[in-house]
Amino acid sequence: MRVFLIGMMGSGKSTIGRILSSVLDKKFIDMDSEIERAKGMSISEIFEKEGEKEFRRLEKNLLKELVRSDEIVVSTGGGVILDNENRQTLKGENSIYLRLPPADLYRRVSVKGRPLLREGKESIFRIWEERRELYEQFPSVDTSSQTQWETVAAISMKIAAGERKTLNSSSHPVSISPGGFKSIGRMPNTVVSKRVQRIFSEWIPSSAFSIDDGEEAKGFHTLFQIYEYLMDRGVSRSDMVVGAGGGTVTDLVGFASSTFKRGVPITLYPTTLLAQVDASIGGKNGLNFEGCKNVVGNFYMPYETIIDPVVTLSMDEGRFEEGLVEAFKIFLITGRWYENFKSRCRDLKNRNLRALSEMLEEAVRQKDRIVAIDTRETGMRRILNLGHTLGHLYEPLAGVSHGMAVAWGLEREMHYFANLGLIDEEMYREVSETLSEIVGLDFPQLPVEDALRLLRNDKKATTSESMEIEIPLVRKPGSFEFAKVRLDDLLAVVV
Ligand SMILES: NC(=O)c1ccc[n+]([C@@H]2O[C@H](COP(=O)([O-])OP(=O)(O)OC[C@H]3O[C@@H](n4cnc5c(N)ncnc54)[C@H](O)[C@@H]3O)[C@@H](O)[C@H]2O)c1
Ligand SMILES: Nc1ncnc2c1ncn2[C@@H]1O[C@H](COP(=O)(O)OP(=O)(O)O)[C@@H](O)[C@H]1O
Ligand SMILES: O=C(O)C1=C[C@@H](OP(=O)(O)O)[C@@H](O)[C@H](O)C1
Ligand SMILES: [Mg+2]
Image (tube, rainbow, N blue to C red; front, side, top):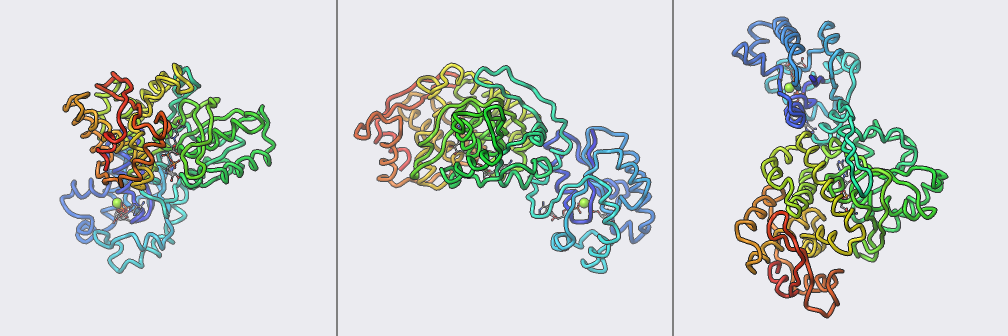
């Protein structure tokens, strides 16, 4: 497959092209750089010494060469579309126009290395006016007020085939499907995260209801909005409801569908990595109440979960990596894919789609196996709480997100058990280094009183007066148990 990025100077073709090539495992080619290398001079020098006409001849010949290659992402020069033959060639390819209003281009573009702007940056407005109809002959993504990752995600979604691999999961049907998110367009009763709706609006049905997400939104106020939407849509038990968003959305819509008319079917489209490896698998749902996490909820298996790694590409730095932490936690517990994870960590952090799809398939299979054995968390499923005991202190007291808190909690719990000699130093160091590589470990010291109060209220503590709590212990990858620990000893590693 070949992908060509077209658009005005400054629209981001070279920047986005480099990132996109790493995501798609393809060779990156920047046409301007190729021409400069072949000629041994800069674009400006070519324009000056040999004229624009010669530059366009070189550009045209290079394009003819490139369409004979494969597995490439090409950032074209802004003027490649001026030649009709070039346009016809590009129309036969996966060509995407990075669309941006001229005012944004003006703010973004630098004159340096762009001879057509030698009269001044304001020339960008004239050039844009002259060319806009040529660019608009191509499929486009709007890159105005989009992050670079959101632009990469929108392009990747456009070109993703949507092939689906259904896992023979036992708790509920799950498919891994790069581009499968696009099937949401056929779903009539969709509740979607506002941010996801903005990024992937091309595929979200107009009948969808977009909601705020995040912990603040994960409460009865949003739940009642969802009930009202389902009422307005006349949803009955023979209809399908869709929840598309991160874990707060899949939890909310999961609970709403489990209680609306005593239960209507739900299909989940988890759109964060954390929701894909964890929140959307296993039927747990819930909402926060009176400042307490997940204090209302139940177990309700979705009709299906569609996991599309492409949709996670748009996530903010930091939030994306939190999903890697939850996956690493599962591989640490089961021992499977643990070595693979460490060796693929850089590819995973670079959001390489092939690595993500393989990782997701393994993580989902393993969580599904645990859930199938102990759906209602009376035994083995509690192991998934690894890192959450101390994580539930960091989340409110350090004011960090759930995923980051779990990373810090996992590292501190491993540190605690290493101090007791229950896990060897090498194991602790390996886990700590991996977590540090994924999200960094600059956690703060916590205030003693608040930390002790929260620890005593942890739902695993036997009684609030007790000074003991039973928490998961992983002695080595794949070997786990539950260990009774004293609250004040555990507290010592976080205060
Ligand atoms: N039910 C379960 O088994 C389970 C398990 C783990 C966590 N959870 C719950 O999940 C929640 C955490 O989930 P989360 O980390 O997904 O949080 P989230 O739903 O708050 O999403 C995090 C942020 O990512 C944004 N976002 C979502 N999809 C995006 C995309 N494709 N591109 C860019 N931004 C995107 C959201 O707008 C939000 O700002 C917590 O409430 C936790 O309790 C539930
Ligand atoms: N999505 C984006 N948001 C903000 N700035 C961007 C974005 N994409 C690229 N840029 C910046 O815009 C400038 C031009 O990008 P570049 O890739 O050189 O554009 P082109 O190759 O289309 O001329 C660079 O400074 C780049 O960092
Ligand atoms: O728009 C144009 O005609 C041009 C854009 C430039 O590439 P970028 O779009 O990467 O700046 C480069 O090919 C040359 O300066 C001509
Ligand atoms: Mg460029």
